Length: 397
Image (cartoon, rainbow, N blue to C red; front, side, top):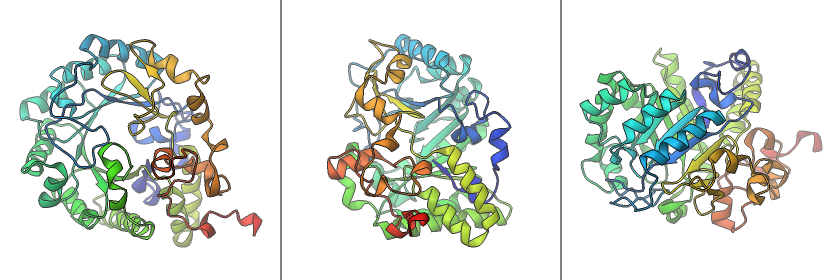
């Protein structure tokens, strides 16, 4: 997760994170990515059921729930363990998490245990009544997925009318006083919608947007050919940076982040190095704190049946199940071969990743993409758009 607005527009300085000791339990949410202890943000895919049919769904969501989903009681036991372990955020996802009738109860329980509870949703099920309920239980944030304006979004979501229902969900959250933001997955078919997304942020006074790079997992594994080319990715990131700066310069600043391609960090730094070297030094310091990809370390995933994964895209490999062992034990058991290597993945990446000058601030990028394309999870991430010249160690010239 790369905070474009924080880094490029200077809304966060290195001293901001240092002031809290960089401990995840103490950091406010907008600084959490700079924590030193990397206690995992945990994504719980509470259900496989979903009311939409998104073509890029990493969870292969279905119309109906599966039989082995964790129960309410099991979910609360899970939350007990996560809270005691020090996981700062419980992100409820799916499928569509709001299909579960006990979701408000589970989120409220997480809040009472001292965690920040957030929801990743398609937004179509958020009524005015539900929004007030979510506000009353202390929910921190609702991220609503849109993949463009009405025609493009409804095509990707597989259900006509989903765009209008999502906008209603956004308005209902705003009326209830819940912080709400957008989630947008970039690909060849919707990259042209990025300017419209920024216009929507401004028009509806939405404070936050996350632009996700495509990860080849779930139904998204069939979309490799629909991913942007490396040059198109550079152009898309530049477009996002330019629009972010425009809003900031006009006094309408929004929190803008890119997610799931940690090449964005070095790219942003190199761009700023040409424009403002002094600010570039602060960006580099913050990127070092961020440390890049954190699959299996600073982010983890629990599936609807209790299986534990390195992140929400890596569900073909499970480290264990919370029905048999607490998440905290599974997560810290480095005798498990892959878990041990992910805790120190920079030692194991190969090819251009192994010699890249940015490895310490990129973290080797996404192993799932590397595995999907080359069948080698330690190979270079094919979505890294930095050139050989850009990643070369200048000391070796």
